[in-house]
Image (cartoon, rainbow, N blue to C red; front, side, top):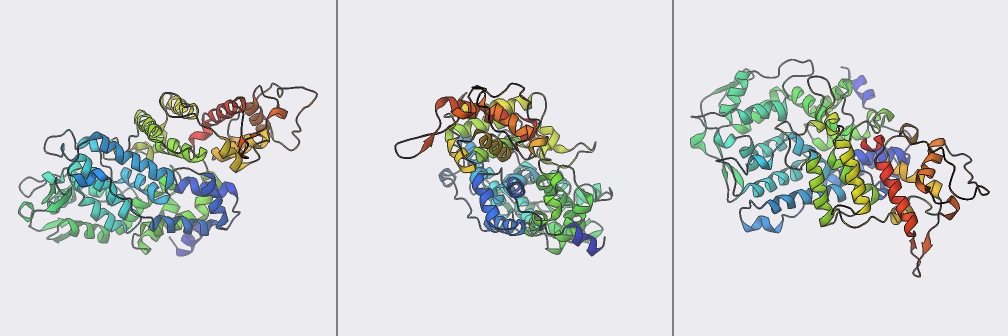
Length: 521
């Protein structure tokens, strides 16, 4: 593939920098778009500068402090595990690309706490502490060099336990970690042309090379025990040497650099661009990945600035995961995740098949992954006839404070931020455009045949409004005449809606989140 084609395929986007375009960038790099984040991105003046700003904030983000319980010794307290999940939720709500990348890596380098707390020989008395160190590695190295990240994750105590490398010795080899190091973390099973990237003999030899690792359940670290390591020569990818874990990782990134770059680029493309990979653009990504020596932030920079990323066909093309549904919704409506609400979301995500730090298999969650062997996009796994209405009910619970989800949501501050709260037509359209990733004309907005409520002697002026905008206003107003839609003012000058209008607003938001297009981002 020529350099000229690559340059054209990844040309920097210089098109209009509208609110819709900025919202697309924020949706993909955060858990969902918020009014403030979109405004800040627009103030950058261009998509390129906004992407640079997002990356700069992410790579310089302060590493979260360790929880207090972590310094008190080994923990197997399920409440401490929930605390790790809650901290991840908080970071997805308040943080940026760095938090989204942690979510990405928990799928790519899948580790499930459930595999360590109930299996003999693992860590039933300290598994929560090990899970914290795992998340910590992803936070610390998730935007740096990919080779170093693979090395750090491979030596993390949670991973050593999860993929049974603690049981891998010179006298009794265990291939679990070796196989996943190749298939899931680096080369992938096949290359871009469908050719095998390794043989079963390579797996067996890698397993011998990575023998000797054990875990300290007091310091929550993995360590190398030379007495358990196979010191004989190994032949991997046709190269013979006395490889150990570090040597194997170096060999993979030397001998299989194009394959690793392709595999990583495909996974990143699936998360940030589309669930249906574009081979031409992924080839461009893979080439760039090698040029920047597997620097993750620089690979993301190329993607997030590209014309390809901002192509209109990719706006709203991905189905949201449960994490993106709930944390994105909180960001949309600017609702702080209180302890009560966090617990409601934790349970809801669990019911929707995405409990944080408990992926389905070693492959992670199907919904985040590239298409399966049958060609179906992975994100289809997030929805079925049972899961979809459950999403609707959960979000409506949050709006109305039902079923132990917390207090009733008051949308007046959000409305004030995005439009004139006394104009119901603008309120309806602005809220819809803020929440939905696709144009209103493609959002399946319900036709309302009934006229606006109120005195027909005073019809509203709908000049210049599309049919979608008119129907949205009717859905918002319901039984309230358009001319009675207005805020009140407190003695201190704060605006508020009377209860009847608040109920209509919540019902309208509930209507929006039940549109098929709200499930996309």
